[in-house]
Image (cartoon, rainbow, N blue to C red):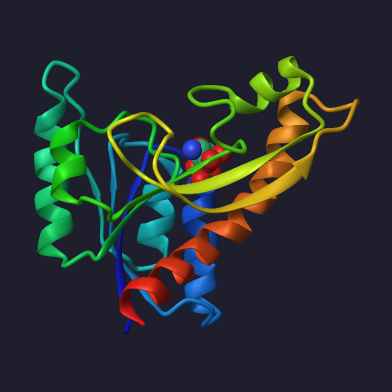
Length: 191
Ligand code: GRF
């Protein structure tokens, strides 16, 4: 069964691009129904439009975070999204949104969770002196970067690494495993 994806993104959208590429190559039986961004200048928005997909900018109101979320959730529901993909979405979701799409929100985080939650996980890995880090795709729950893990990839940390070089090597793996995770969930839930 073709799975309908709703994407939330704030930035350049390279993970979104990788998922879209996997769909176009026929490696993922899915369709991106809509991409929503909280940033008007997000590269992800341009990319979605270039590919002829529905894409919407919804302004973010810091005073009332649910305003964005209600609007976004209504749009995602209207498009019949089965699964919500956080692809570089840089806001913390409120329990309102998480309840509305319970067990249907995936996030990717550039560390081997439960290590190095939150911001700058690649720098956190360098500071801790670990020899391996990586990327994790997990379901989103109320606790930050803490939901059930769907898949992970391990990336060696080199003595010469900077935050940039480690981030770039982890990102290559992110692009590979996000589609894998969607496929795994799809097989588990929809046969
Ligand atoms: C990725 O490193 C992702 O793990 C993190 O934010 C970054 C987004 O990159 N959550 P992109 O917008 O997908 O290129």
